[in-house]
Image (cartoon, rainbow, N blue to C red):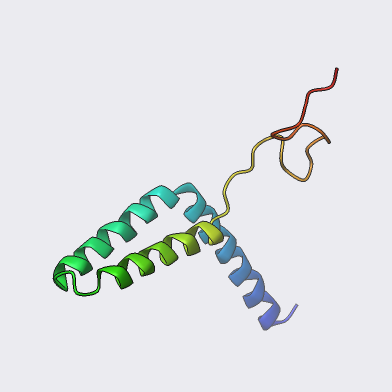
Length: 91
């Protein structure tokens, strides 16, 4: 295995860890983004409120898209058919 393969493997591993971290702490990250947006809005005296709100919304959406959230037990790829949310239990 070459150096590039090792680097690619490590990069993928770090991406997975970051995604897992973001999934576990997405509420805290979202709160921090809101707080930062509020501070920026205050510093600019409301001149860019709409742009700041748009940016914070996009940032929180990006975190949600990146975050690996734990799956519901009945929705993973190994789940039995008909056991996920919205399915009816067997009679």
